[in-house]
Image (tube, rainbow, N blue to C red):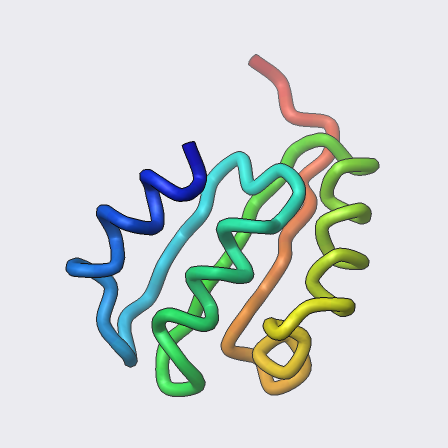
Length: 84
């Protein structure tokens, strides 16, 4: 699924764009999006499961997307206590 998503978005995501990844899970796609939009763009991942959100931040810190996380073009947001 991730490969199909990235293949589709490869033609549509351009450097400088903004991306919102709702339900970002492990952060894999959010990190890929950050690399695709580059330092002039912004990728934001939102995850409502605290443990998964923390796991995603640790994953991103170990990846090629670590620099975008440091320079602010990648954000990870963990929302807790959401009510349906």
